[in-house]
Length: 119
Image (cartoon, rainbow, N blue to C red):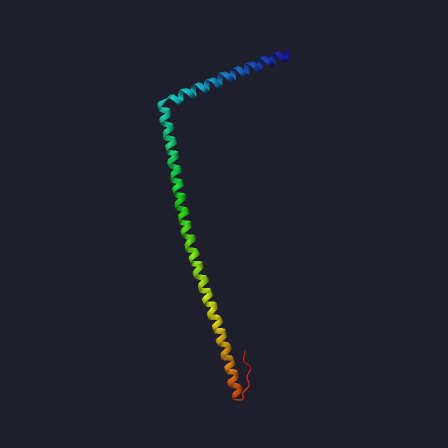
């Protein structure tokens, strides 16, 4: 007997659920044909699209600014690399000139008979 009660309870629950689902479907169908509801939904969709467009535009502007910054930093890095190469060349030239001056000083001191430790 208990299984019969449970069976009828399940059947009753299924019928109630079907009635509730039917009511929701009927309400949704009525709302979908209501002009005021449709207008309100169109306003919501329009506002959402405007927000998406604005966010997209803001994102594009941000990306453009970052691309400009990157190009400027790349150009600055190239200038710094060129300046470093120039300074390295000047350093090499100065070291060569210093070595030549040291040799000339050593030669001059030897020619005069003086000895001196030159580093």
